[in-house]
Length: 200
Image (spheres, rainbow, N blue to C red):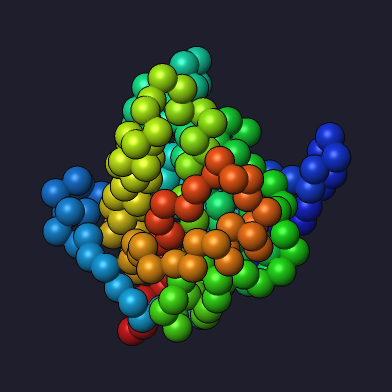
């Protein structure tokens, strides 16, 4: 993938193409759903990345701004960061675009396993606790974890239907990754998920 970034209101933005959903019966996708820890380093096309991110938490009801993944109290506190070989980006579901976060290969920081550094895509789920109004401090990590899990399962089912490999992970040096991504104190990394093409 060779993304072309454009300057939009001071931000470097990459507009994703319209997503082309995959088609497979739900029962078949559930049968194929699995975790994989072996990936080939082939890069993703923008079309493949677009479909993946829309499935993860894209907008599926334009008027209401509803997403493909539910969110407690409709906080939409969980953002998806996309870590590729060329850079790290933040996915914006409403505009279906990526905003540049850092021009560097941060894949190795997204987990403690060796395969994260060579897989083409690592998704990082980041919860903004400041958006979780009317929630006790002790409940925020639990609710954010549940919302991240909904997104992760969407990714699993999309990968099953698209012939991709994926695994969700909690083994992360969160402090190092948060620093590399420039996260605020209220932003917490919940999970990461590697996506790529399976080894034949």
